[in-house]
Length: 367
Image (tube, rainbow, N blue to C red; front, top):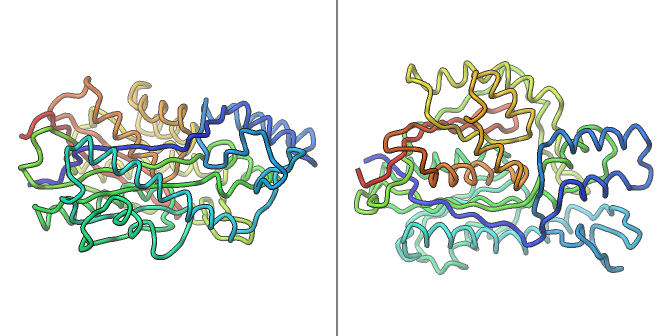
């Protein structure tokens, strides 16, 4: 039997920020000159985001004298990486658990039935890690096999599903819980260069989880079959999307070349992933930003409606790194316009520059 996503659950922090409010906050920072202010306004307008969620409630105000990220005068502070990572250790596990509970409830799967856990994250590090905490917080069996995929970046959601599919195919009775959580806003930095401005304009916080199994007894409700996966490295781009650890948070390099590289390489990557099959009925493309979606649409000659789910998630939530692709797959899983047997192509992009792809099939029954 083919491994199948039975359900996807999602979770976001309580604090919601409008894109305009975030833009105005950065534009008002001390030392921002007229040219930088213009760059900020341009980048935030081009992002095509309406709202984003964050675990940093003080970004929404009001701010107390002991706030970690924002001073009483509205100035963005620069907490150390240790402080930021301590917040990740405290705030990420509840989001992992919330999204996982939602996925299990929707699939009708008891926590006691989970045999494997795969956690995914690149915005914090601690041990025992999110995989251990998820077992404890959900009351999963103590003998559950645990795997953690860390620091792979925005593309990591698909490798998480790929690992789950490999496990489920090898052990058809297995029930694999895949959970992604990213707190990108913990690494917010002063907008002192164009790359930081772009990062500030798109990244957000969120979590998503999927229940994966090849057990036909659990397939009665349909789902998304995980048919095959592919990884491709672009010919260039190794230094254009980079994620490193600095003294004041994790540092993202995201150059203007990234959309152009993806636009140039995506056609070949998708042709190899499809292996001669017809173009799929639906697309789940990681929205690293609007320009990346635009380049994918143009490079594959897709109609505007093909990326509607990706653009909608970007508009409502921003770029939540690895969790974002699962938000999109959830929408397609519940899209009544997709029929039994329709194909779905998923694409995500990460440091390297890496293109991760997956081909899925819509199942509306246990067939």
